[in-house]
Length: 366
Length: 154
Image (cartoon, rainbow over all chains, first blue to last red; front, side, top):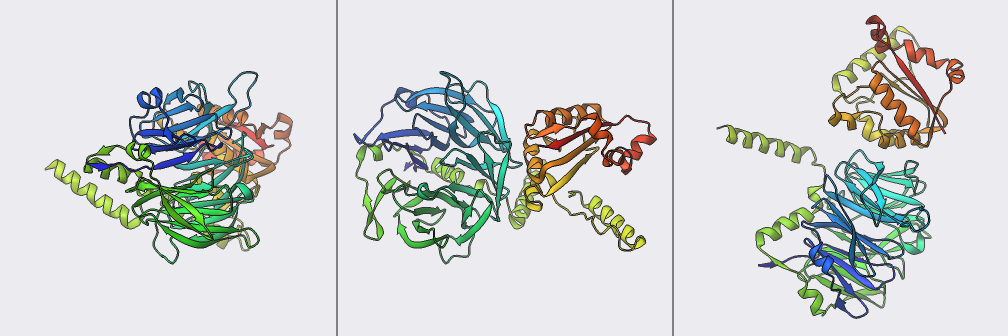
């Protein structure tokens, strides 16, 4: 039996809760009491397949989760009850929560979710019975975020595009940030410098943009000094200072960059070793960095002088909340979590796959 | 922007011929092998175009193929992006169902408004849209009906 990894981690805006996903489970840690939230809904009404995306709205009222079971679920953060659930026709790749202009007592928060076709639907957070098509890419949408002032919805796809649409009038495109040479997997906007966008992709680069104008300011190869194309699986900015934490698949160190606003560039200053299989790293409300993955499930890092250092999480309730599965199941999950499963195959890979299909067909016929 | 290889070759040959036979003319037309549905933002900047033409597009009759139609709610946002304010989108089809589909989608899109009859009458491009393309002449030969709908980018 092997332990499952923690593939997603996020904090609610008030900093009270840390929500994380391990396999099909969504768990919430109350950071004040340091105990796991006990919720019947989270246990019984959770997801039946890999959870791919998790997000909070800017007020911290709702949390939305979605994934391979094609379900979008909205959770009320005051009591962790599931207030809405919708089964979509396809697997959900990414979700976001944004303000909704509604009258009177109606819900003021909207859930946006995207599927493999690249269509993004939206509906009020407390009732997902009726959802509208908000916008669409011609290709699978990998990630989406709202700008901090909620004026723009930024979406990125498998066709190397980053689209900046106005919000809530998403039919009105503001700009495109074009430059990535492969699927764009992650987006993040720093709190203290909200005119910048940082994106990461499967071309092994992190790019800095003036996103409203659609101008690329800088391209950084990750990890530093490497020439290979790896997938950027996580990006996070500290709420306390202009520091970016990036994770590249296959490399088990958190890459830390300082954002220099005078020179419009990201400067690498540390590669912090995780010690296990690293899947992502998110900054917490107190400015410390939480790296997550497998063996260890989570590691907390704090700023010591100019650099960050590991301070292991000795929280037993958190570590014991992660389940065990068979090795085959674990391999299946790690493969599914990897961005390789989304990326467009390049010519060589496509020819190899074609060859495989032909051979399989021959076998079936004979 | 054309995705079919053979058609790209054909159009490139036609352009070549036209340039040879008319010295100094036809320099402002080109064909490129690409997927227009995916790559429009790669070729054009915001508000770069003053006119965009959808001439007798493929109707994709089957319901499951409707998402391949060149006019869709999703793509209209991109056409509105490359068209400048006041830019014009011309649509024409000999398939009434497709014409109604295009008309409905453009009309429902907040960034487009339909041109009035007077505006259509005073636009010198309209008669060319109706009659000058090869597809238009083909429709004339079989005596089919043509349905026009023209919109301005607000």
